[in-house]
Length: 549
Image (cartoon, rainbow, N blue to C red; front, side):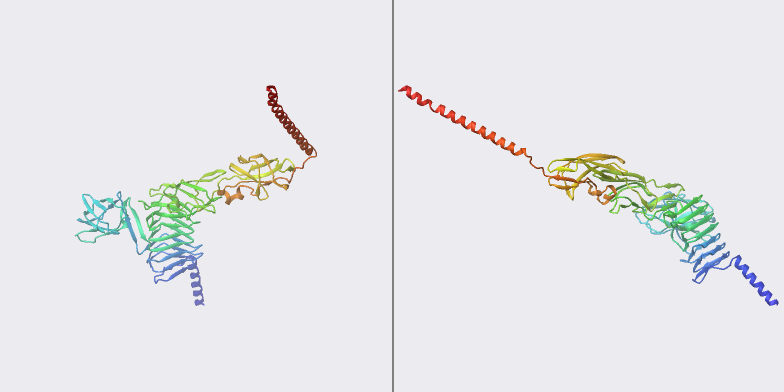
């Protein structure tokens, strides 16, 4: 009986322990630990392996965990990692990028009266470069070497180091060590431990991975050397994240950073917000130098338009406010995000000042109908649709003045056209019988949006038979791919007109015969007169001969 009671009590305590949370530890043998129930870690641990916080579970870390290189923590969907302790990568690969206006503020305490600083760089500085570091009256030239020594007091004096640099490429300080001849150690400051202004703390590689597909809650936490991906919800409150930037925030996710410090980035930004992810960023300390607090980086900048051959004039695009002209392809598409700088549309700079791209796009489609254009702000989205206003010219009807007409004589008609589009156009209208261009007067007109006109036309036919006049707008080659979007390509038709060859009337032969008679009579008279004149003058000489005899 007593045994049964004890066993029951043990089960109750076991159940209560499960409810209150399991107190376990991270792996230290390179294996993967699956956390399927709530756990709390509040001690100091050394971790070697991987952790997966599974769906529905919460891992709370109040203690300190040091992770081996290339370890990983994955927080699955609907899982939570709550951190108020520390995650520290074992391999901290940092460097302090220095510039002309960088200052180092150093004090190693009272170690000795005098000593030296050894400053180690991430590379051998070329001999042709100018790279001087000065502390007080002492100056050391780093050209041609990967480290320098400089004499300094080590009696607790505050030291300020200045730089005089003329070199195009980035130089990083990896560490500074105080050397002296007295007793005691020679302390070393790693790059992330150096007190500095106007430098940029760079993290050259991450020590471990932290992938958040669920929820990350940091409150008073510290993270060193992580590669952090936020793919759902990350809430960072009053925490220090060192050597763990940039934090990648996936499209569709959200991040809140408040009263926190993010120092040391592997790129030129502390946080990269991708596409339409959300960010709230308040009262924070960033890496500084030339490292931005956060940027919004679009994965692409594709603009879909309503026509090929549209010129897209771009101004103020991206981080560098670039200017460029492009032309839409056969599908009406244009890419305005050819480089990463052109895809950065928002950012908070190294001084905490917010900026937004003020880009503008002017789209112009030039054709024989006129120039169709629109100007819009550049969209801050991966894809967007921008339509250029276009006309829609419709031949509504053709009303011929009669249903019959004589071949080789003109007949009048009225062509009704209208513009139901959103842009004005000047168009030519051609008329056909069947597939053949027919002879009409020229039709050219200008139409504003919503305008309708009646255009008179004269129509000739040189063959007889029933015919229908079809008139349609002449489409410039550059608009041929969108013909159906700008006109009713089938045009408009008249009623059927019967063309006939005209017949001779009964009076026509009589008139012809009469004219012939008159012409014959006139000709006879002229001939008679000429003959009479010849005879008259021809007898005169004979008369004179008779007189002489």
